[in-house]
Image (cartoon, rainbow, N blue to C red; front, side):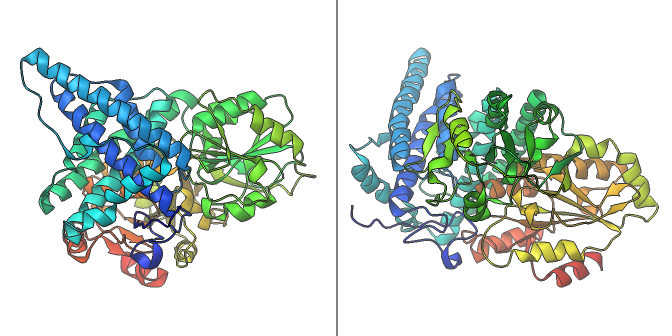
Length: 553
């Protein structure tokens, strides 16, 4: 197949901070990029009809779920498999027709004529991957940039990337049976809005904040799904050294996959380890009750090639964060949910993990126990607010001077050592809250405690930004002030679209003075950045010394 042009700048590591044009930093090739662009385009067509049908009182849960799955599949490090993307595109055409029929039926019942729609609603899937790739090139970001200013395109992408991030959380919640009709309605309306030919800056900025509000609702939904299914997080020591025996490593974000794997491996002698964003799973009572949930192995997603090659067992990637597998472990890595890589065996929706278990039993496993070492996790807002009186007293007594929320996505590019250096430089009378995989930069360091309160509080996964918000709100209530008036500073790292959604949530809540790094998004143009600085005083990180001096005065 001939080379395919691409342009992608949806992640922080985009080439030269301008855009990947030949091969994605994430490993996405031009073929996959074009298919993902086409899937987003096709999904907008589904939502245009679904939005109008909903306005007339008609909805379809299958259409709703497809839209969030399709958006999630295009998030960075999720679906790299052209064959699966082709399948999603065929589904998009079917669900688009289903949504159109729903809309036309609603119009007939009201005696109205349906609106004639064009753009993505008229797309029909070509036959075969090569022809689909050609269609994808016609609706790529490169094509759309030809008709609009960089400012408008960047704002459109800000809204789209936010919706992609929210879709990931919405899918996790839906897997556990938690859904909201108004959430789906907002997805459809937002995607319909993104098809407008002449958007205005103010409207796009308004939608960006609305996506932040939507994400807050969805993170709450996911919190209810996780805690309602597996119990509320509890402070828990987690072993970070191996245990002798056969083993499986679980990475990604999906608690349901881990729970089912633990059930299927019970009594087999196989030890199950978490990796990356799965670390917080050890804090949930219904997961940590399994004695063979042995511990956490390795660090953040970007180290997986080295860590997976050294892991002596099977590996399961759930939902996202996959990189191109090395030959060392290609025959013992598996995918599930929406994550996929060409040639890697995929576990279906029935969650039959027998192939993973068989691969683990065939692998050597750990030959001996490592020296026991643990770290502490499980400081969701339920746990922290349970000792809120002690925290408030410590602040009033001058024992705690300041709180820092240092977290977000990790990545491979240089400059992220800033977060290690920053936390190491935080004075001993300050508390650090952390979440998401960015914490692997410093979560194995010793920070001690203040009057029995650990100085490092691991709040959880990236979606547990909801817990961090609840903690901040509770502290603001206790001190009778606004969140922006608290002795609290947010120093965040971003990598992909879930981080964009969380940032939009913080802006929706009116939180100011956020420091963001290692670099600001390439799709945020200087004029748009000026607006964000003016309204929210969002700023790039500098050096740990400069930022700490500014924050602490």
